[in-house]
Amino acid sequence: MLQALVFTVHACEFVARLAILEIGSQDTRLDKLVELVRTCRFGIHDLSRLPRPGSDELPRFNMPFELGLSYGAFRFGSQRFRNMRLLVLEAEPFRHQKTVSDLAGVDPKAHGNSDERLIGCVRDFLAGHVDPRPVGSTRLVGLLSEFRAELPGLAAARGFTAAELERLEGFSDWYAIAAAWLARKASGKAAS
Image (cartoon, rainbow, N blue to C red; front, side, top):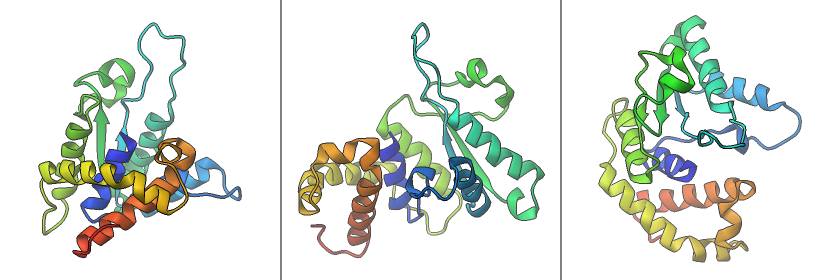
């Protein structure tokens, strides 16, 4: 789902910025997050990655924490931060009322753990803030499918297997390949 989200952001002609792409040991992860909040006009926060009830797996609270950083900047920061726009995503409608009840009234967009619905949520959010509006979500879903079909060849041309790029450790390479592919598509050149 992270890939679908990032792909959509780029396909809508924005640049996705993520703390995991900020490679280096000079800053803590929190410092990286603060810098992203400070420099980004939009924040997209997916709260859906929680373990199933009854699971022994402990929940990760990174996304609610990151949303809190963004919301704090929005509420208490300078005028520039009050112009920040936030999209909160969730797997199911109203689930946030059980997990982060302080978000009452925020109305996260539910994607049902579906790439297609996630693409629609992100595209519609971004479309409300740009002119001209990006292509429709049906086209974006098709582009992602086309990219995924070409990924094994694109990965091999750069010395990777597609499986290596599926792991979190390979995400920055996946990101670079996807961004370059979309740039070629936008310029009308054949992607190879």
